[in-house]
Amino acid sequence: MSGHSKWANIKHKKAKGDAAKGKIFTKIGREIAVAVKEGGADPSSNSKLEACIAKARANNMPNDNIERSIKKAAGELGNVNYENMTYEGYGAGGVAVIVEALTDNKNRTAGDVRHLFDKFGGSLGTTNCVSFMFDRKGILVIEKNESTIEDDIIMTAIDAGADDVIAEDDVFEIYTAPADLYKVKQNMENQGITFISCEVEMLPQNTVTPDEETAIKVNKLLDALEDLDDVQRVFHNAELPEEEDED
Image: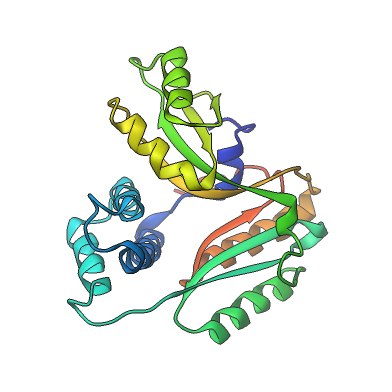
């Protein structure tokens, strides 16, 4: 992914190993549960659920896990209730951080998040203390291959209702208003286009570049936050060096 990619900048890391994949499955399972609660258990009439299922498959989540998450949320395997929570604060060096969580225990999650901010040289702030520095956007990502023609993708996206298209080294990033995300996705899928990602993201209006020591602290905070089961996604406004993959 290009270092200048907006989408790549907000993606902190990919799962490494079975334990990390298991955590991703847990997080996606919660997203599926919320989508079912909001729009029903039929993905053909619930675009949010359809997107969650696509995300699950892109992360190699077994079909049995997907079906179990849907049935559980629909009440067939018991009751589950998660609440959306958003936390905002500053990492080391004043890096703005937004944490989105799905939790069944707000006190536990708030305590865990606050502890990590304190531990790694940051501070948990109040609602809207940093969110004004970000724009909420729908982002669809298409993987480039030999058959993709840039002009065709751009025209199809604009005709489908997208706001902007950015061509990167190996992907196209399609930006929409959050409310238009699933409509644009459906319109483009009707034209035979498939996506590797479909999310509403928080994009920083401007980024900061911390020094090496500060970047290490920020990376540790982001890693620790993402490792919490209750935390779904973490956004920040730092330009950070890419972490090397571990063997």
